[in-house]
Amino acid sequence: MKVREILKDYAHGGLVQAFGSCDTAILEGAREIRIRQGLPLIVRGLDNETILPYKPTIQDISGTLEKMANHSLYAFDSEIKNGFITLLGGHRVGICGRVVLDGNKIKTLRHISGLTIRVARQVLGAADKILPLVKTPDKIHNTLIISPPGQGKTTVLRDLVRQLSNSGRHVSVVDERSEIAGSCQGITQNDLGERTDVLDGAPKAEGMLLMLRAMSPDVIAVDEIGGADDVSALLSIASCGAKIIATLHGENMADLQRKQSLAPMLDNKIFDKYIFLTDKPTPGTIREVVECF
Amino acid sequence: MFLTIIGGALVCLSTTLIGIYLGGAGGRRAKDLLEFKKSLILLKSQIDYAIYTLPQAFSHIAQRVAPPLDNFYRRLAEAPDGWSDEILQLKSNLHKDDLVNISLLGASLGQGDADVQINSIDMVLATIDDTLGQLTVKNKTDTKMYRSLGVVSGLLITIALL
Amino acid sequence: MDITVVFQIAAVGILVAVLNQVLKGAGRDDQATMTTLAGLIVVLFWIISHISDLFGTVQNLFQL
Image (tube, rainbow over all chains, first blue to last red; front, side, top):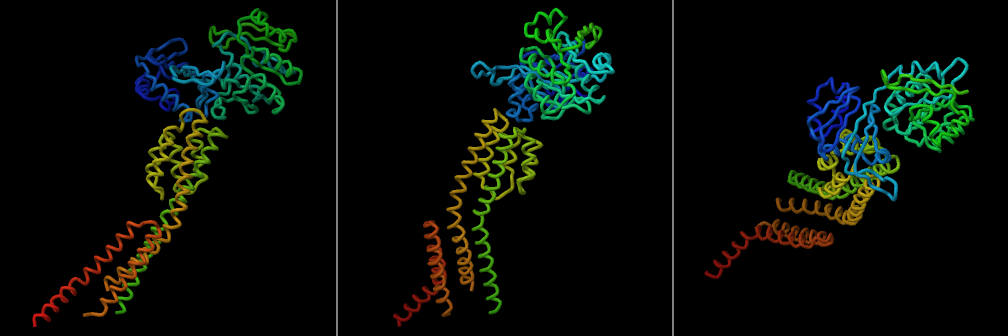
């Protein structure tokens, strides 16, 4: 029922009929819904793809986006500039279209030609196997969770934050792309635990330092680090007493050692544990744990 | 004889009252325009400073204005894209011209970025200010005129019917 | 003939003059002219029967 409700609220023009006539089972199992101008709609489930015959027009898409933004596109300016908008419920809608440049930077997107709705599904318990690795009786270990895209890093991180928070630790989440908390207009859509603060939309490096100063956290959680800025921020935080849980795109230890920007991180042994995930049999399965003390 | 006097007095009184009421029309329009102007300034700050979405902005404003504007904004909070329609249906002392001018805002509300919204609102505010300026001058002469008209026409009718 | 008519006409005359001034002062010259005309027509309406009586009387007087 959830997905159908979402689509009912936001679909515009011909999309209303197109989704209305779609089978409920298909909709409810959807992970991703791709709406492309002039191309058939695609509903992607866990391991299948359903193609609906309807081809959206530009008006369908722009009307839908307007409804998603509550008829106030100006209020979502910075999100649209970054290519996405977060709906109530934490669902992320990727936006594609014509880029308007301001010098070399992207000012905004116009003539939206495609929307990709990523249905948010919080998996409670995704971090059950990881928690004992991160939180040992004596202390919490700085942990880096690594996997290729789409294999469960963020879902695991989200649940890890929730479980740590509920077990008595104050956690600060730096949610640059609003994916962990799924905040919509300031309201966190996912359950992140009783002692969690969320900084929504901030660049990671600045965000981490801000949270450290402002929220005195026990643990700082951040998704998809990688740049030199992120690494130097991590260095500062590591020496300040707060623990860090982060995720990273990668396949194995060799990948990490290949990235130049990560060298200070590895050399200074910021992280105690490196947990590698895979999506077989399901996303979020632990493949390998490398300990580094 | 006595009855005639009473009748005459009644006629005079009623025409005078009508005169006073008509004379006040301009003042009432000015008052409503001022209220609306205040609500538009509120809208500006909601969009520009706080960057609230339209439904949020409208419900905030609804809490800070007097009737009939409060219901107007409350209804808008439910259906943010209905600005033009709602305006033209608004029951108030505003002139048709005022309403048409304000309804033009509907075309740009929610479209474009914050600057566009602010500019459109500013344009409407400028027109309202103009109208208010003209009204203050006109109302001074108008109120007196309608009052005198009321009294004199009352007397005229009484005498004509005597 | 009723003397009241004279007073009525006089009163109408004064009131129309006042209206004229008020309207002219408010800048509505055309409406001022209209009310003057209207007053004139009303008064004429009143006295038209008296005037026809007057002519009748004069005719009778000079045919005698």
